[in-house]
Image (cartoon, rainbow, N blue to C red):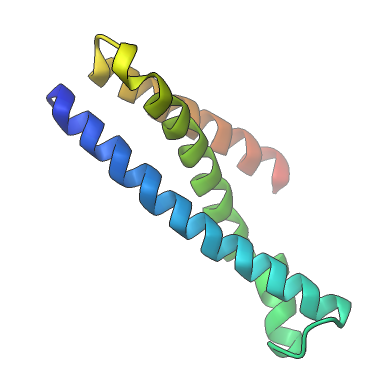
Length: 106
């Protein structure tokens, strides 16, 4: 992998993970508002499933850890000499944080 490839991967993953984080945070907020009685949609059962589901929480944790690690890497990318090693370190850190959350959350 070349340095330019790792920079491109980091840039695209950071952008898309940010957009997906907004989507997942919106799902959690809307379902929480529905459970609190402040929103008329979605249905009670659907809101309960979305708010307490592992199918929403696990990707949310993964996206959060990847987005944070790659965001920090993007801030430092100009001063890093070995971009491939920095990319691998950021990916490993994101997966370690995700594994920690997944292990202790479930």
